[in-house]
Length: 184
Image 1 (cartoon, rainbow, N blue to C red):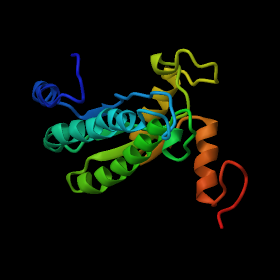
Image 2 (image 1 turned 90 degrees about the horizontal axis):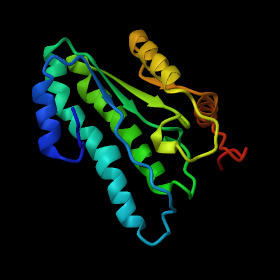
Image 3 (image 1 turned 60 degrees about the vertical axis):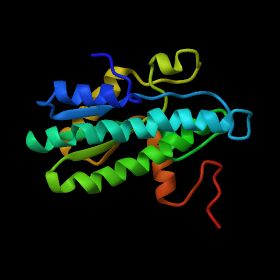
Image 4 (image 1 turned 90 degrees about the vertical axis):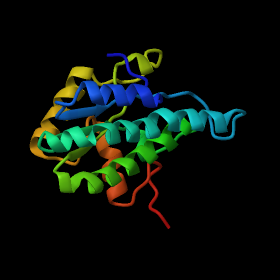
């Protein structure tokens, strides 16, 4: 089924067609290059939020009822290491992924009573069409999927799929930033 997460009719139809769902994977996303000070930054940020945040919320809301009826199930939200760090080259993307992380944490609390597990999957670069032209180390989709399923099976709330993401998360946990300085 083809699905546009920014189209209310599309996600409602998908939820209606898949009432037996026990796992929703919110993987739709866009990543456009640019800084928050560039011309067009407001439009870029709006576009990122429409897909990366509002689309994730809309899909989660559309499927929450079916998940509850089917025993709770799980929602896996594909996030990013950019949820925690932001660089000018992908600024709007980073802002949207930070918001998506907060959304994930909020959904987890809202859906806990119906026994829906909400998992945030944080990753660096994954070898997909989204980063096709970038010459950077990339995780294989198969490895990311394996780790996601293991996290769901283990009842985890978050999973970091690569060493960079784990290091950034650990650095945040002890108050160290990427440039090696502690907060003031």
